[in-house]
Image (tube, rainbow, N blue to C red):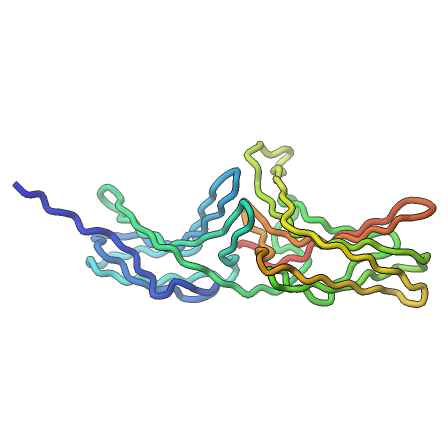
Length: 258
């Protein structure tokens, strides 16, 4: 007696690269019955791997099935840092029987608008944003990804004494640790991927002084996901000859996972 060989399962996306907000289509091969299809975001870090269904559909047709998924416009792009990555795949699973499944990777691109106010509650994660007593940081432009550029100015609130400011831009890779949350706030690990420094001199005749930084091309975009994040943190420090040193910080945002 010869047992029938079950056909191999395949997921065949129409395109290997898709954009946030697009309709994502493709074909399934070898599946039968009811099939659940989803585009899944995988957040990988040293502490954990978290998978999130971004869009899904249930198919009830024959063995050569086509799927269509509406990818939300607010998903972050595919990206990788030193220890963390965001990856996407199309997964298909038979709803009955032994739940056979298959998947295929896809790359997601996205265009984000830099902003300062988080669209999510700020309790987790914490973002570095603070004004100094006599000055604060303002942005002119921010392309918050590898190969981009960020420029802005330090704007005084009132009179300031002559002296230099140290301005620093850092790219931080951070991920949710396995340690339990304390008072509802999770602990996040941090790894410095890159930083650059500039010294700017204050001018008593102007209310602001400019700065700008070029970002190396191999760095990830600024992303706030569920289990990991890449952040571009701006800080400005002024040493006071008399009194307390002044410090300001700003973390502009680009992509926030919905």
